[in-house]
Image (cartoon, rainbow, N blue to C red):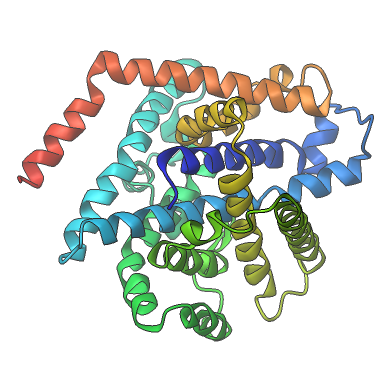
Length: 355
């Protein structure tokens, strides 16, 4: 089973992909910032950046997997309490950053109330991470994921129940079901939420069936391991390439299947073969700060593109954003310590849910 460090490693990979995606998927942004291409062409980099959006499916998989493990471990009898506690755990980091961004916007940038068109309801929806559902304005477009994450929390007990009843057949069942569900909730920034349903189901199934424990021990011989690595890497690349090819003609939701398989192989690879101590430390450190980086990085490249793209180099621009975002995350964590923010949230949680 994934340990904490295994989850953090994959989060480290995912957040690195997210930053690369946002910096280089847009031709307009690349040209506006004068990025120069040396080793790879602009088309190749844009293709890699578009493929890097698989990070969203990775985060969805990890959320479903982790919450299911917790659900099983605690033998949950009252899903509503589980959802409420998990919701507080999800939102506490968001609220802290929301408050900081709101205050800094007042000081250094435009009045954030103008973004909300001076409507209190829009402010409340953004503070609750629900703007993407209602289509109202938000301070940062990447915060759409907070809405998706909350919906995931709500539907997860139902998915866990279905997967418990039908086992691995649930995945095939869900492939059939999504053909008839239509678009559902559609986001300007995250696409159709229904596209993430298969990877959520796969995350639940992997947790329920101890999938990673079963793949850990086999194969034992070096040749077998080399073959396994080649197969995993091959499946990842084939899935990502086909995802790009089917972007405009995905009638049967095949991209959802490809995305879920690619994510499974990425997690599999990380779990079994990214075991070098230095690699583990670097990726897990990034993973530890992935939540803060996720919620703040877009503000950095939006308001300070001249800093992020200063070198005009693809790799250096990506490393610049990653470094600045990481430093900002460290500062935010120190602020939480100084303000006793986590203690405050914990006390509130204990008041609401006394043992």
